[in-house]
Image (cartoon, rainbow, N blue to C red; front, side):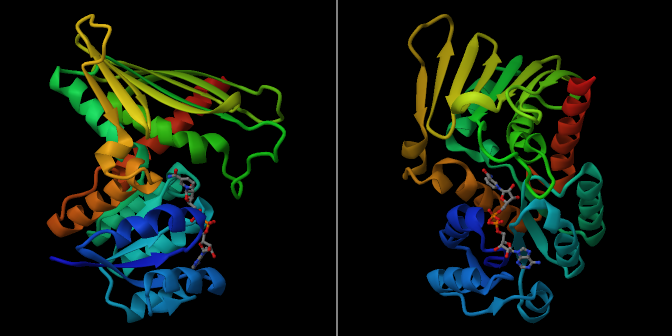
Length: 321
Ligand SMILES: NC(=O)c1ccc[n+]([C@@H]2O[C@H](COP(=O)([O-])OP(=O)(O)OC[C@H]3O[C@@H](n4cnc5c(N)ncnc54)[C@H](O)[C@@H]3O)[C@@H](O)[C@H]2O)c1
């Protein structure tokens, strides 16, 4: 297959900001049709990208348009039936995180994809962020990762309770860095955690300590009663460390030298400072299209994403004990 025909279901905020521009920029993919229940959003988005096939009923779109793959971008509560219909129609599916509202939903989607022989990808964009990719490469070149840390704080006080259609803040948002911790550390063998409620009526401070099969250790810290949004990652190896502020910068230090041996800047690497380019959205779509062309399962396919979703539950369980 040299050219991939994509259908979109969902023309909402995140899809419009990140996924449409990412796919439109690909030379070997075309947005062949768009579906949204909201006709204003549908027409605005379709006008912007010159897409003539417009639908409010995704089943009609699947029946009438020759599509190779479908991007289903909407809150997790609506995902499962649509994703299952796409697999049943023989399409590969790209979806945002989290993959459904529970491990059981993610499992059902993964089993259906496998039975249908279709590819799936869950959009864990941090893995594809340019500075993360380059920094991790440096550590991997020196042998195994021995320790990693993911930090993802936000100010979420004095605003409405976090309730994303009934799905919690850890499952929908902190899951980004849960996935990244697994990406750095590998298979998880043990978890300990502390989950707390500070200055709020909902759980908002999450700290976890993870042991990986490789022997490496991982730390996660996410405080949603903190001062401001702050996201930072660390990866340590044999005489080497990377300190990452994705999507902006990463610094790599080695052998007791106080000056970094490498400094990566997201905007330079991506040739743009637009978040869809620096923060991994464009690159995850590139990866998805490449996988469709070669038949390889994407790095963050449903079978892999379930492991991150399970780790979410393990951290919450351990932290509440
Ligand atoms: N990667 C990130 O950093 C990041 C950041 C924010 C949000 N997200 C994820 O993005 C997703 C939300 O995407 P969004 O902001 O574009 O959503 P949104 O809620 O803004 O829009 C969803 C759209 O889907 C449409 N829709 C719902 N059901 C439909 C159906 N059956 N048929 C056709 N259209 C339907 C709605 O009309 C709406 O226009 C969530 O999974 C969220 O977790 C990811």
